[in-house]
Length: 504
Ligand code: SF4
Ligand code: SF4
Image (cartoon, rainbow, N blue to C red; front, side, top):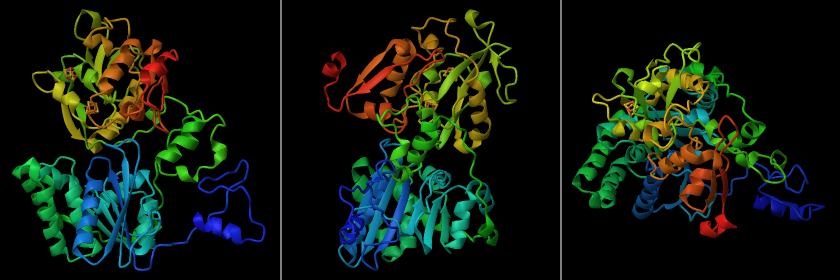
């Protein structure tokens, strides 16, 4: 963009009062920014990491920079791009290494190495955009080559062949789980990076990484240190170079057709969420800057590793799972026989328990693509034999996405139980669907409950902080309305003056 400004000054008739950074197709002030200009010094190695907020990717990359900077003659630099969702959101780390000082505090657009730390990102984002011919692509996935043909979109498989990429896969989640690290896959992915990027000899790099682990996790105790070292030791044997089938050259895109929503969701929100926001022209925004509400329901991020599976015969119908869920991703369904007509085969229901429920069928419905996998629901479930068991997201998507969609056709039964009880409150639609708060957030269950108790006559004056991020950061907002069109009115002040703001 800076080059475009200089080119403009050099031109025969320079544009006065120009803009860069936006595509102004309304007043036509923007300068043309040409692609293909790479100002980084020759010989710079560029690596890009697509990580999930809180999987440790950013911390691991910061220590990779320190290890390389401290132990080689190379200069190292990192630039980190986060979305506002923090835990469970997208983090893209841009790392550069070179023999001369690096002054590139901006995103990489032509990389030698790309690592994708979350398997479903290959479908959501254009992860290989700008990768150099002959570059290296590292994927964390549990997939065999056959499964890759099912889960990796054709455009990605074709790029792997067309650009002659070296393609590696590691099942980092499996190794982390075996080592007792849960979703913390950072040390595993960092070990792979050192093996593949060749910035320093791999044995030396792994030795330095282990020293770093002792410093980083020393305070957390010997056990945490040894779990991380075990994960590093298991990594290289499980890193597989994929023999790319020739047929991938002709792979056609298998992208799923996304259900149409509102023009704002289709043209603005979805583009921003898939990292295409910078390419949006001015004309798609409304002149008053108003963003639609209740749009988080279209995000369907699918970020959980495990989601709950309901075991009907063990359930005592207490609704506590729904009560504690920070993300409104599990709700009781109370339905009449008529409402169940046309239900999918796997939409199992049981007889309602108790006097109030005699006329109804009952079911706990999980919404797997909005669930964040915190496990709070399974932890709270008081049934003698667990009625919620955490299972892999992949095992639940096929049946439960369809079931969840069907469950939305069944109206909430708000006149059966007292609203101000744990059980009865869950008969009301949460008007906070579905907050992008961190998995297991301690704030959102309270606010979600407030919306179930008072949502249709509730006004929220939000101060700036976590609650304004999960409650209203662009482009998606979770506050929504019920079937009558009533819901919380929400506004946010930029400052910590919520009390004055609310009374103003
Ligand atoms: S795992 Fe967490 S987010 Fe998912 S349904 Fe249970 S409580 Fe909600
Ligand atoms: S907490 Fe357990 S027993 Fe209670 S409704 Fe949920 S699944 Fe059923």
